[in-house]
Image (cartoon, rainbow over all chains, first blue to last red; front, side, top):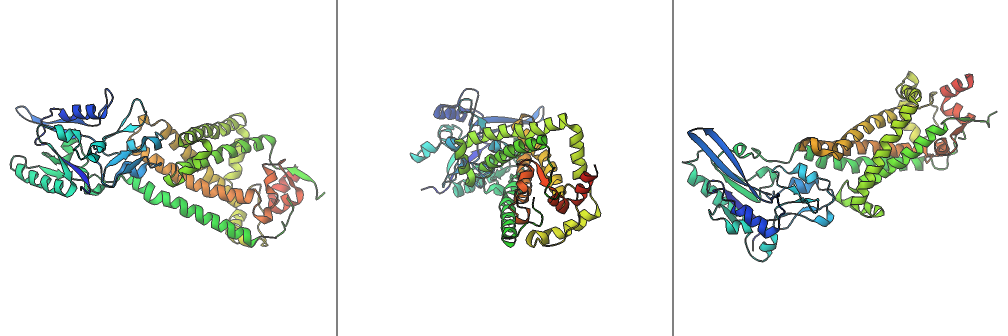
Length: 242
Length: 216
């Protein structure tokens, strides 16, 4: 039994064949022109010394997911096994999750007009199968399993390519409660258009941890004050009749 | 003579206040429904959250349009209102210092006040400022396409923060203005009734304003 479903994506092994892209669309009926997972391409260097990197871009199923924190209806939520999902029936299309996602993992579904994204193929996981992208990756660049195991395997792979790729690192996002989908990166996160140290944006922390509790404190204190004032003046006649 | 009544708020002022009250309460109610998942249940009156959200926007249009029209058609009145809100004298300071005690023990002698009392001035200043922030952030969130995600998230945060500030002021405003505060019993009629106040009360509560009215 897996406690936290997790994925490891190895940019050193990825060939940009797009099998994952195709398989995801087939498996999940993703509409034309939209992607739950896609391959982003990055280039560096100068001819003839050039480099190209490929990154599978999709929901990273953050442990502490900004999209879930900002959702005003509970439509975006985490399952017990760490998968971030969207309950369409609760969604009111406010778009906060779209603004909050640090990884640009969501898109507006053209039919439902609601945010849609990778579900880690939860319907397959329940049946004891792997996500379809991991199933079909010919380069063995997508591994699937328990979170701790993925971290160990990620570190092993980083160590094994360190000689060829001195910048290699394991991207696991401790600032967001650990990413459910981690990367073995051949270059710095910035090269792959990833935030260096992904964390909850200050705006969200201020909003959720300071402002929202303030509403209950300020509202409660005001009402309490007014009730005391009311009781203190109960039965008093106005000094001048209005 | 003491039983005579003088007009405090004109028909137009009361009409604007009525419409503004309704739109404001509607904004609060529908806004609270999406403030937190815990409050989602409030939306049932509107038939669900999406409808509550639509009503929030309709109310927002009214909330913006009515004062805007009032300003356009009675610019002089608007400037006059700003003038009375942003005026301040030493009596106001003295009144303000005594105000908290007055809230709990109303039999205290208070310094003479104009048409607006010191706390009213402060409250209206805050509401004016908050309203501008709420309207600007609200419009940003309504048309998100040209803003960065971070600007949008800060807009939500500010929209919520100023909702809290406005809400606290509104609670106080309702408590005093509706005359739930017993020494002000009957005050509701100044805005929701015929707009008049007894000369006795005007002299007692708004001595400076009363003298001006009498001198006219």
